[in-house]
Length: 269
Image (cartoon, rainbow, N blue to C red; front, side):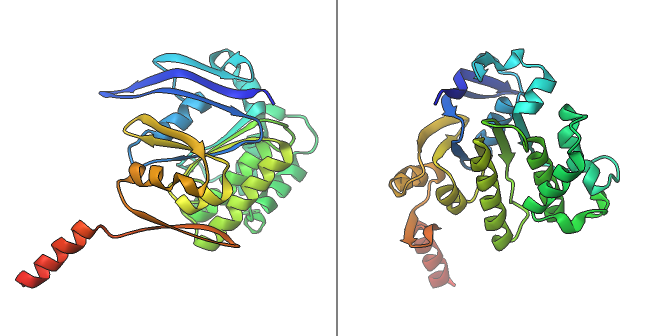
């Protein structure tokens, strides 16, 4: 399968901070999680791919064309973005927020059906008729995920970009919606790129990991148990990996240095 997205020596300057250089490739259908500590450049990388930021240097190519050469309408039909913040300025009805994902496909005749089905897939059908600004953070996240589903509903081999898509949700719903995202992308051949902090979601629902640290790419690796040493380097902490028939689980281990310091404090007391 051909390359869907290519970044070649991409850099971006944000004040006194420079992100990059970044050289990455992915194909349609791949699932990639972007991991790293706070401030590592994860969301900046996603915004570069979404064309919300322009690189200071380097090249971004999407489906064989420079990303900068795509019109907004063309890009809206080939990729969908779920940002980290979900604010809407007005008290719009939920169905209208979801329908915003269909703006580039006006006149398709199926909007109402797709909006409802997208809400079902995002486990938010019960929010139909509600005002978006009256919803909880978790409910807003589900509605915005439905908007992304509606936007990419009838596309094939496109690109879904999501930034902390389940950060405001309880563990059970997080797992369920992550599975919904993976299934939605797989059914349509979409590539899925997600900024995550949850290592367990990353290892169990994604094929590859892009590990960011200090604005640089530490590694581009498969989401396998063998990546544990890289994850320990990424977060500067020891980790323990557990595995059974249900999947993988990563647990942080307390630092022996920190434990010794606490023991000394207790002894002095």
